[in-house]
Image 1: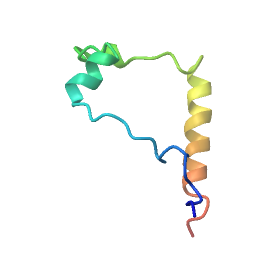
Image 2: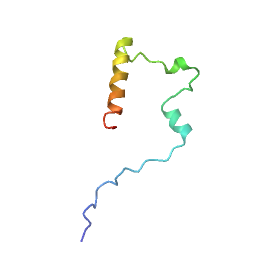
Image 3: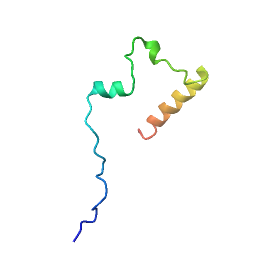
Length: 65
């Protein structure tokens, strides 16, 4: 008699244990040196940002009452 999952790979897949340093080296990451390193032009205008913030605020408070 065989088991139902005979021959199937383990789930979740077994991954090698790497240290944080090894993971960072594999991704070729660099330390953050200033806030400018984190800057991103996500919104094309201040109005677009304001619309996003208003939407986010509304959604977070939708079920509160």
